[in-house]
Image (tube, rainbow, N blue to C red):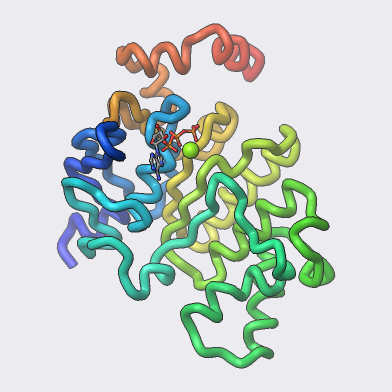
Length: 255
Ligand SMILES: Nc1ncnc2c1ncn2[C@@H]1O[C@H](COP(=O)(O)OP(=O)(O)OP(=O)(O)O)[C@@H](O)[C@H]1O
Ligand SMILES: [Mg+2]
């Protein structure tokens, strides 16, 4: 492995993605360092989810290159699920499967394991995300919003991937549940050495959890760095985002 392969979990260069005549990502470049929690902010409809889905190969690209753990990607590849786990913006548990079966889904898809071992793994993953063994037999409709996010996280981590993608993991949670989820992400990142790439609008998450923050505007990354550097950015959209009336109020209250 050369040095840049060791340093970066994800390298995106000159990425172009569009739908019909709409260009969403326009020669976007971005590096995610190994072991960091990188936050991504951007306008609604600006392409954050598209970027995440393109990196994992769910959306085709028109141009550019993507490397994950030093390997160039070409659309969906075998074994990819062992490299990353993802928590989609729209929770997306399988409603007809129990919590246990949801968590076991990636194991069934990718490995051949005994039922006994899969049950053990499912319970261990549920406990890791702060759920109890007795939650395993519930169905998604029987879970609270916070529990649903945790089950989705347990499923994303089922195969012990080194990279975790989170698309607005705390949206829809009350501030206490959101704070608890942030603390969980931080603990998991530290104990498992994960690289986390997280879309979030939550200023508390950006400040407390993220090592660096990237801002997406006009189809590109227009600023990237620790939160304190982003707050100094001269880019008009970044300024409006962090220094607009609403965020000023929040930041004032956070002091
Ligand atoms: N599969 C698709 N087909 C066509 N257009 C798409 C598709 N997925 C996304 N888009 C378009 O790409 C643009 C970016 O969408 P995306 O979901 O990435 O926004 P976002 O930054 O995640 O927004 P939000 O903060 O609201 O989640 C939007 O204009 C959307 O309509
Ligand atoms: Mg989105």
